[in-house]
Image (cartoon, rainbow, N blue to C red; front, side, top):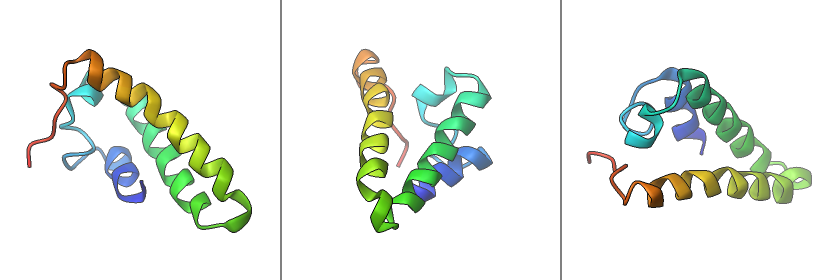
Length: 79
């Protein structure tokens, strides 16, 4: 989450801009998701916030999964 969040904030890399699902959203959505992923990654390392961070990141991934399914898996990365 730390690396993909940083790529989304910076706007580069396959996880930042070339993911087809992220291209359909305004830049502020990409930046917000990136910031939440970075905050969640850091919070996972703090024992007092691990559970909340894991649940929050899982909740963040639910819409991402729905978008992938709705796009019939076309939002893939070029590896």
